[in-house]
Structures are given as structure tokens and as C-alpha cells.
Amino acid sequence: MNTPIKGRCTLVGAGPGDPELLTLKAVKAIASATVLLVDDLVNDAVLEHASPKARIVHVGKRGGCKSTPQVFIDKLMISAVLEGEHVVRLKGGDPFIFGRGGEEVENLRQAGIDVDVVNGITSGQAALTGLGVSLTHRDHAQGVLFMTGHAQPGAQGPDWPSVAQVCHQQRITLLIYMGTSRSALIQAGLLQGLPAKTSVAVVQNASRHDQRYAVTTLDALHNTLHNEGIGSPCIIAVGDVLTVLCALKEKSSLPLRCAA
Ligand code: SAH
Image (tube, rainbow, N blue to C red; front, side, top):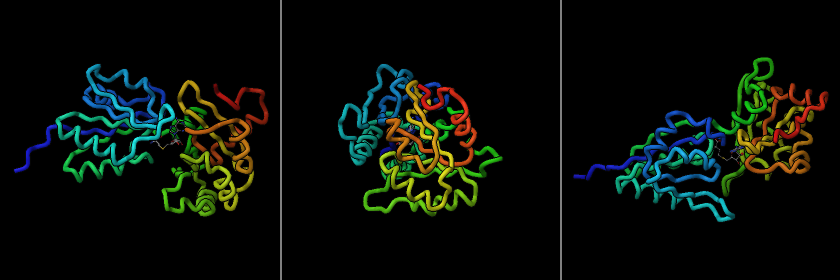
């Protein structure tokens, strides 16, 4: 007979950065963890909820180090659970919006381990909320599309002209994660299906004290990122819901460009 597994694992969304955006469920899970495996984009302030006895392992790219290979993280999670630990895997934003939460759940289940998942506020959502812009303002949009700007190794990545056509025809707000390093390619692709003057916002470090953003138009996306020095972690938001912000920028002397 198999010995029952004593430990357990919870995947927890740490939200976009502001520690006050954690859910109560996330706080409870963090507090009850005996081992925490913490991703790169998680604000350390959320670790204040952890027990002083908990073992905290950073598995991100901080300090210029390479990120921990996914296989190693999976092994670490599984072995800690088998040793009877309550493992909390802390991920930036929501665990199931990019960030490999789905793969981790599959691997844990394959090892016979049950896993709970706690939602977090995804950075794309927080980015526009921070600007006071509704993703689905009914005068401008009837849906939202979450896309990655980063192709998987060996894969082609999104077909931006097709994405642009759908967004244009269906009035969809487009949120692009991990897009800054490919912004020239994304811009060129999107311009094949969306008007050049479509409104765009780029938001770095959404919800953090060092949040910065710029509003621009699609034909100036790449240059804006470059000129303003806005880089990762950044959300590129595209769509008519941003038009009011862009118009404000043109009219006013408000410090709209950078929130910091
Ligand atoms: N699971 C995360 C996304 C992980 S992918 C979530 O739901 O937010 C990593 C990408 O998320 C980054 O490259 C960036 O595009 C985006 N991101 C994460 N945190 C961010 C933040 N505070 N501000 C802007 N973008 C952020």
C-alpha cells in the first residue's frame, strides 16, 4: 500500500506588487507555509506574512543570477511535499496567467500531489486600473485579450497581424505581457490590422511605488519605450479604452507621462 502524502502544496498569486492587493486567502496560505518558493516578480513585502520559522527560497533571476531551472523547482516542490512540508509557491500576479502555473500543477498531480491554487490580481489588470482606465469600458471595448510577447523556444509566437484584426473588428482591449524586448516586431505586426493612431499605454512596475508609464499611439510604441527608458516588467496595453488618457496627455500639462 502507498504511504499517504503528508505535505501539501498551494500555488499562490502574489499580485502585481502592491502587498495590499493580496487576497485574504493568499495571506493565510503564506502564513501557514513551512517552505516558500518565491518567484522573481514577487514583492518581498508579502513575505512579512510568513512564519519566522518558514524556509524561504528565491527561485528568480534576482541579483543578476540566472533563474532556477523549472525542472529543479518542480523537484524541490515535490520532495518538500513528500517530506511533509506545506509548500507555498509564490508567483507574481495570478499563477494561471502566464508564469507556468499550469505546468507546475500538472507536474505535482503526476507525482500524486494535490494542489490548491489561489488567484492573484494579474499585472495587466492592475496596470490599467492604476491609470483609472476600465479594460472593458462599454463605449470602447467588448472584451480583453491577454497575450504573451515572448515566443516559447522553438515556437513561432503570436501572429500579430491576425491579433490586430480581431482586436479591431471585435473592439477588444489587448494586454501584452513580456513584450518590451520585441516591441518593434509587435508594433509592425499590429499596424497591419489596427490604425496607426490606436491608443497605447506602457506601464512598468504596475502598482509598485516605482510605477512608471507613458501613453502613446501604436505607430510610436517602440520609440516611446526606448525614449522613456521603460523596460521589463511592463504591460503594453492597446485599444480605444485608452483614448481618454491619450487625449488628456495632449491637452494638459499634468505629469501624465510618469507616475513616479
Ligand atoms: N503571472 C503574472 C505574469 C507573469 S509573466 C501576472 O499575472 O501578472 C511576467 C510578465 O508579467 C512581465 O514580463 C510583465 O510583462 C508582466 N508583469 C508582471 N508584474 C508586472 C508589474 N508589476 N508591472 C508591469 N508588468 C508586470
